[in-house]
Amino acid sequence: MTSSKTASSLAANVLKLSDPEKELLDQVDVFIFDCDGVIWR
Image (cartoon, rainbow, N blue to C red; front, side, top):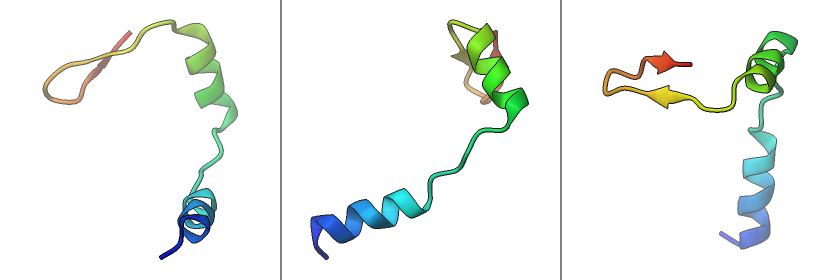
């Protein structure tokens, strides 16, 4: 597998953020994840 094919394969799997997700990321400076995967903000 060539590096260009790998890069194009990765680019094909990129998801777009929805508006609520963008707003959450814009409002919070730091996210802390505990051992159970719970997100604390």
